[in-house]
Amino acid sequence: MIEAARDRLAGRVLRTPLVRLQHEGEIYLKLENLQPIGSFKLRGATNAVLQVPPEELRAGVVTATAGNMGQGVAWIARELGIPSTVVVPEHAPDTKLAAMERFGARIEKVPYDRWWEAIETSSYPEAGGVFIHPVQDERVMAGNGTIGLELLEDLPEPDVVLVPFGGGGLSVGIASAVKALLPETRVYAVEPEPGAPLTAAFASGEPHPIEYETSFVDGAGAPMVLAEMWPRAQEALDGAFAVSLDETAAAVRLLAERARVVAEGAGALALAAAVAGHGGGGRTVCIVSGGNIDASKLAAILHGETP
Image (cartoon, rainbow, N blue to C red):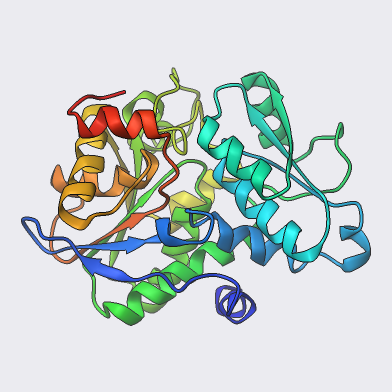
């Protein structure tokens, strides 16, 4: 499915570069923030929507997201000339909302609990159209997995791959590709400490709800691991790490200062983990998953603050 996705996405998404970071150790950055929508989500959204039968697409597409998946769905919907609706939680950042609207999406802002219900049930009946789940749709995961194929072509023998974790679609997709081709490479998920259910699940051996707080790392973190994603993550990944908000902000600064890369909070999680020494070292690939950060938050981080 991942190899088929690569063929399907050719010419529609950017084959992003893998660059080495000038820092201690051997750290490489897979720059998904350079996608046209500023996020890896374009891959999974496009791969999923292109496989929906045309007669079903006439009513449009719907997704639930904190921001980046909405941009991906809206982008491909605009390309195909169909309507799109994006269900977002009340704390969704203005930068991402503005981008979704710019791509033609209709925004439905709802309380967090209603938004999470749409995620858990893979549905939002209030809006017409085909629901594209941002995480647990295999077509989405396969599209995300094309990142794994690309990074192994550019760096044939990485020791560690660190991937931001929000719901698991990115980490499971990448790990599935990497492990199929290079089983000895370790692949870990990285979460923000205020919302690290996967780290807790690996520690206890099973998922359970955690206390969750929203933060400037809006593209990652959750109150629990989706039931369908836990067995996939448990099989594909070697484990998970949680990093603090201060460590994440420091990684955003490091990316800006050393690589001239703008990353959102979730996009800096992998580097934060690498700098903290998680994963065992060696040739380490950090997935910079996105760069859609509010200017005010970025300014605060560059001034040494943690939003």
